[in-house]
Length: 329
Image 1 (cartoon, rainbow, N blue to C red):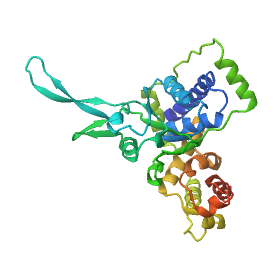
Image 2 (cartoon, helix red, strand yellow; image 1 turned 90 degrees about the vertical axis):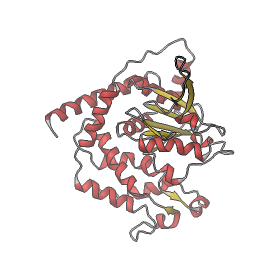
Image 3 (cartoon, helix red, strand yellow; image 1 turned 180 degrees about the horizontal axis):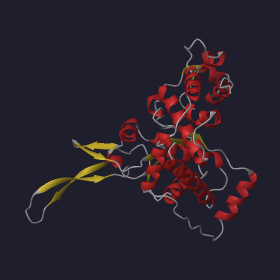
Image 4 (spheres, one colour; image 1 turned 90 degrees about the horizontal axis):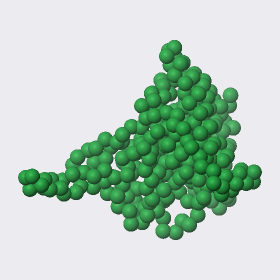
């Protein structure tokens, strides 16, 4: 890496530490979740966050957007939500001087740097697709006109693992557009005590802004420029290949319990996420530990288990645990 890159890498590490300190003012615990969300954002990826209500999913996303000085919009997905409610719509305006009427595009809530798609599986597939198109192409097309989204652009979608009646689960092809699936669990006893104490007091938190959109884009490009050893790439490709039951080298557990494995996008996200993790920790190149650290969020929604797995209580995380044993040093 160039000398200027090394300077920026040190600045990124210091910024990451300050970001974590600011988040800790509002979010108690959940370090792994915070790290995964930040790695995803700096990798220019989108994340699906799964957790029961009341675990500060919305607060976490809003806090990160505020610290990074990024625009933020929250969309509550409901069964009657229409695509235009997300992307925007055209309205008729009349010019008072000439009397002429023209169409004007009114931007929807997707036009923000950080978009929280709350309970994304509550909306019908047509509405989900409108958001997923923006995630893939970073633009919105309406009425024959294309409107670019401001960069950086992230979608952080949430799902509730309970109350699945009346929901529209995302198809595997659409899930694949999310870089990470992050699981939020209940806080530890000591953490929950601190949460109750701070949230029921008169104390008000004041957050400092650490970065802005322009600087954030610089760090994203820095991560892209980081070198990766061929050996790391080879191990990642071999690992992803082992998730596919038709692969002759796949473990027996994969052949028995997996219907579909991960595609090439998983390999790309494992390398990109490992680079981002290494950069945030101030290292010039990723190692195999960086890959291990992000295997579960990258592969969790890409390793599709079958009925045999469901009958025996085998989850995709269990399969990934066994696959990681093949990721030898």
